[in-house]
Length: 101
Length: 101
Image (spheres, rainbow over the protein chains, first blue to last red):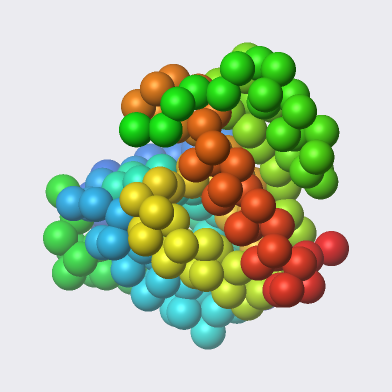
């Protein structure tokens, strides 16, 4: 089980990332991704789904056509851990390579 | 463009379907699907994504591990049309074949 980040660590991590914000009173981090259309959005989600499954760490997320809203939290510790940061960073790379706007 | 169903038609269609309910004051229909785990949930979503793309009619939906919450609406007419019913019925078949609980 990954350890919960302190508020200071969380703030520092978020400051180094692009477009991620705290959610649920610091228990999660969130970002909205937009793509050219549904195909790109779905391609991004599928790539992340495979990584999430191999990490055994899954996002809470929603999709409406070209938009994907993600919320990451480590439910077992009730907060944000390095697993969430790792998945968030992977999402940023995958989104960028899928032409996220 | 598919025509918006009347309130009576919508009610009749929903009565004939399993687990679907009105949402957004009748402008959408919603259902929550639960699966054995993430793999099954994602398999279901992927199958529906392919169908949605071929229909050019896409769901608003969210996923958290084994749970998928779907909302269907025809945004171009601001309500529920036969396209939504068709996609809903497809989802029910796909979910059943994917072992939805």
